[in-house]
Length: 251
Image (tube, rainbow, N blue to C red):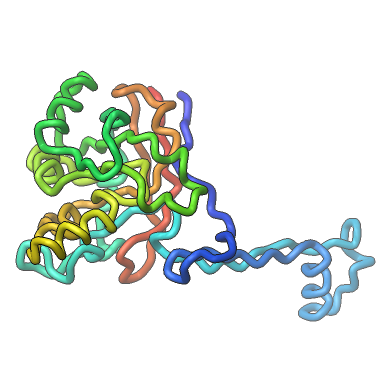
């Protein structure tokens, strides 16, 4: 068995990152830990190995600001006429299953994957989809994950392609780009020009109770099939999403 890490590291955001996208980490070293031990328990540093106490970190982390799993509640308050599930309400069985990588590296930024292209991509991967499969869309945009324009890159997936996967039993699907939809500034321009619903955030708001994994990395290290995906999200009460350590497990 070989495990491929598909998750981006969680690190402090660079200066100038918008507030809604920021991650911040405060680091407390072993000297800080020794001081805390003396304050809490009266044990001086001379009684600790090398005079050191525990190290620790405090993390301020948005639920969508790293490799994460979305819950249906992220998309709308109701899905198919019922209250949408939050991340802690979803069955764990959903987040472990056979994986399929669909190659969309040839697609341009903003050119969303159609249902026909998704069907062709699945066929090229050489697998007949089954309920519980986890489909990962490889765009190659993880190469830009540290760039300021990362959220503006990627082809994204259309609502029709999302429905096509859902109808074949896929309940978890992921992408190695900032978001599952085409870049939002492109969708916004079209939605405003046409003054229509169903254009902006179209795949998210297609009224289906599915989960997305966004901001994946390293999909190029996986074969098209013959592996499993583990993508268990943190159990955040009432959360619209949660960070996850997503891995591919080669059979």
